[in-house]
Length: 506
Image (cartoon, rainbow, N blue to C red; front, side, top):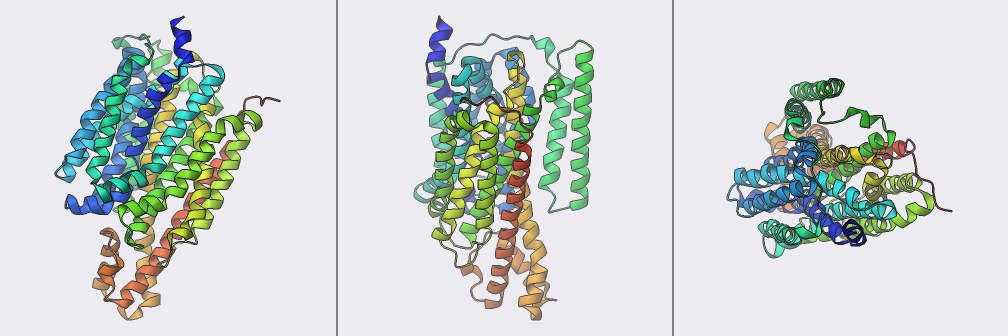
């Protein structure tokens, strides 16, 4: 009777959705605050980009361990431990006097806490609701994460412009308190395994593999050859992890990750789609936010306001996704979303100029957000279609890892593509538009330093030649970023055809 009452209530969903919201919010709300944080903490863009990336990287690195800890500690207990730790991290970040303390609170403490919470948000929902209510609940959790990721720039803009970026972390602390206050609304889940079942060796190997993989991606623009080696080492470590887990299960021991789950096509494909969608969104938002601040010279609030159409499009289409999927199916709706997102990216690729206005960006932003709304809202549900109850915890860890890796790699990969586009375009732009400076290394350095420090046109307006060169580089680099994002969504489109769909109601 108690379980029936709990399933009738949406309160557990609300509590879990709040957690999903702040975890996703943390990955994007600082995008519009980068220039102010650089000034306040006397640091540079690369350091803040690294901190942003490491937040989701650390979350992803601990995700598989967290998924298994649910079986040992219990879903609810682990979720609440993570929530409390998250509160410590966000408080530390809010009072950070330096980039190092910001990294400690935001990337390290909140990253680990997010890892403890994220798999539990999915598995608590799966264990609390069933049938159509589960489909709707999983979609809402997905929507909350996506909406938080999209609304982050506006939220960060309001905080930074009218108060301080520090208040953004303080607001998250308020939500943490609310979650803890309503903790009794969550159903209890008894542990199903003992501490002796914990795969310590597998945890270490998976952690090393994920860290090396993303570290290699983060350092691509600094030392390409070394980065490729690090990436390969990360992939090798993950391959060793997979083989170790298979052998561990054959020997009758409990694996950290049951590799047999990957035999399910929907879990494999759905997780990759989730990764690619978050990679596309996180990376595009990072690049667009930098453009709005450095080229259009918008403050944090106006930067967030400019990205609002993406948020609105994502919210409207994500909320509509569950009911529409019941009529036409997850597969077709996610494919349609991919096509819509591609169109939005291609429209945006032509909009980044010195004289670009907020109105110029609105159509592309809205269309891109609309397409992502369909994909993000349904990815987790489609990935868990065929997973049995005993595999839900492991599967939730897989999907959550995919999402976190997407967020981390999005900022890293798109950020690197932008940097590489700038670095590669400096020589060509100078040779074409300022041939007199072709052999002037100081001029080349001035161009690159402008981008590295997120400068404004005011910083270089005394040099008309430098302004012209910077403008051309910006146009080409941003167009390249949006074209790459369109290609990523094209991959998502192809992947949707590999999904197994539910039977659509007649």
